[in-house]
Image 1 (cartoon, rainbow, N blue to C red):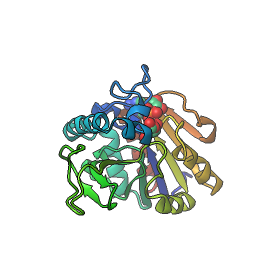
Image 2 (cartoon, rainbow, N blue to C red; image 1 turned 90 degrees about the vertical axis):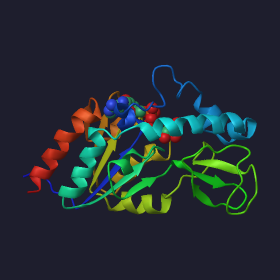
Image 3 (cartoon, rainbow, N blue to C red; image 1 turned 30 degrees about the vertical axis):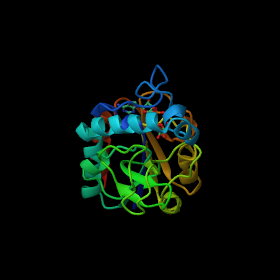
Length: 237
Ligand code: APR
């Protein structure tokens, strides 16, 4: 008799957006969109060259705005609509493809590309347009203190209060498209397992924390996730 879960937690990484044409972080050349991650996703890199970092994310915004959700994102929408459980999505991705696919309960622990934060007053603003060292904060009117609302290495994650609760309550933990090398996100599976969840990973390559998963489904998530979700839904009918 197949198990029916009342609470499912999903963790996504860059791999779920790969089939939408967006670059993953640790592909073969080890660069993210031709930059070293530490140059464009660290506090030191931002302080050293804010113009380069702003330019990087301004270009990435255009690419992300044009990207479309793929079959994996849409399979999550189907799961949330047709499976009788609380289903939360914790994403490491700064793209908005989960939102474009109408996924619900999405928590961006590494921030979002379409937001900027003012380092002077702390206000988080919607920012699909270019942000740079000349941008004036519309809230406190200070110029040059805007930063992409992306969590850089060295900064705290967002939504962690909600994430702890999600991991404690979930009965099934599904990881999709993440290499499992960046903590604390890479440790979420361990926490879910500690609280008794079944754990499944969807990935192309062997992940760094694969030993913590009960099940491994290798392949492109756009191809492997839909049939898995169909099966989950059928088992709950
Ligand atoms: N389907 C499923 N998995 C895929 C696909 C695909 N089409 N393409 C790639 N993958 C897998 C890879 O096998 C790898 O396990 O997705 C994972 C991508 O790993 P990373 O590039 O390391 O991306 P991610 O795990 O999201 O990185 C975590 O690191 O640099 C920081 O903040 C950044 O959020 C990012 C974090």
